Amino acid sequence: MSAVVRPDADGLRRAVEILRGGSVVAFPTETVYGLGADAFSATAIAEVYRLKHRPSWNPLIVHVGSVEAARELAEVWPEHADELAARFWPGPLTLVVQRSRRLNEVGRTAAGTIAVRVPGHPVALELLAASGLPLAAPSANRSESISPTTAQHVIQSLPEVPLVLDGGPSGWGIESTVLDLTRTPPRLLRPGALPLRALREVTGPIALPDEDVTDGANRSSPGMSRRHYAPRAKLILTEKIEPDRLAAPVGVLAYEGADGPYREILSADPREYAADLYAALHRLDDARVATILVQEPPRTEDWLAVRDRLTRAAAG
Ligand code: TXA
Ligand code: MG
Image (cartoon, rainbow, N blue to C red; front, top):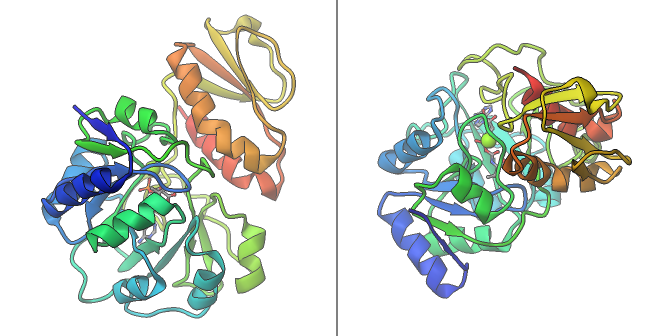
């Protein structure tokens, strides 16, 4: 059974004790809640994979408290990394770099890289400082299901997590943007909270993710499987909301007026929409709808991350 605690001095002390003991703790970040483990403890990392039912080929992001700590995980600190870090860390940007030869197995990929970020949530930063550990942390949900943006979502999805630090709802509500800096030009591996436009101001042109949608370790971003971020209900993306002919009860997720008892109307602004998206999907699942009709968002770059998550959630 999980204990949900406030992130005060006592809560942090308990979290650090668990982390140092080689187990796991869920904690808030500015994007989504993470399931944290000492990046240097093989036992703790194994526990993350077990609890999430995460396939072993999908590597973890390592969270650190400073740029210096991030550099220590890298063999080469690439061009652009310092300026990106100065502009966007702490914040929702994950950088993929060549991994240090001194590193253990954590986050290992076939390409010999490591994904790192400095999270922009005060509780996450306090936990990193208090534990003195780099924390490997995937989103704190069962593999393939919706990421958690509240402590409640975490215990619904992972009831076995020993401790959840409750920092309230995550501000961004969608995962970090993952950028591969081992290539020229840099390549987007996962669209996320930080818009591409902001990154381009620093790096110039950015290559978009491959269209390859098969699973497995050899993909450039192993975790971007075709089906992911999925609610229990069947999700259908549609231009026109017509609930009549579908398996009832039908939920509707839209950014304009729509009818029906199970209805979530989100903002027409992509950042605000993203902030509410997972919570809305969780609510529709809790209402036990069989189908969720989602009004298709515009095909513009501002909606890239939202469209990416909705497309994967709809993949059957
Ligand atoms: O916002 C976030 O990034 C959240 C919070 C908790 O920080 N974390 C998160 O972790 O979304 P996760 O494990 O759910 O997603 C990490 C993604 C996966 O798609 C994984 O395959 C990819 O990052 N990844 C990790 N290491 C990689 C590497 N070395 N090269 C390419 N992709 C990598
Ligand atoms: Mg995830």
